[in-house]
Image (cartoon, rainbow, N blue to C red; front, side, top):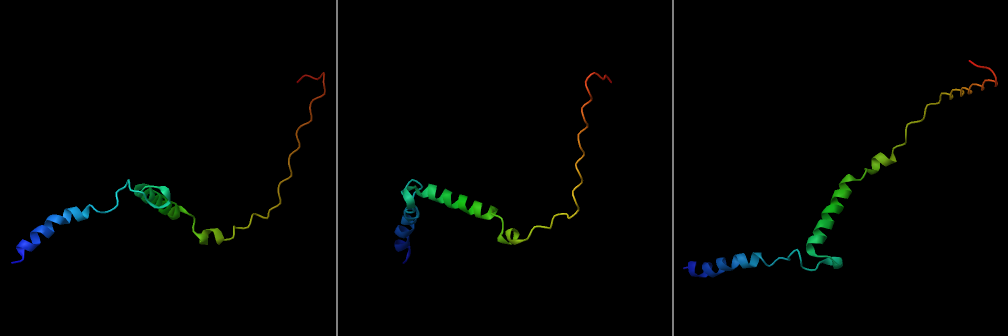
Length: 84
């Protein structure tokens, strides 16, 4: 019945599965298909790592408004001729 028709079709299925682009085939932008895939994956990883816009839009906390302490002056050098 249908078995004689299905045998040739099933025999050709593995050959059809191998018809996709190879990693070495030329791809977009002068790179191979494999290189284009790797670049797409790298771009996706970079997009995942980017800081969200909500974080960048937040205002920073105000700085402490306490007055700065006066700097302590350095000690004056001892006059010459005096030993300690």
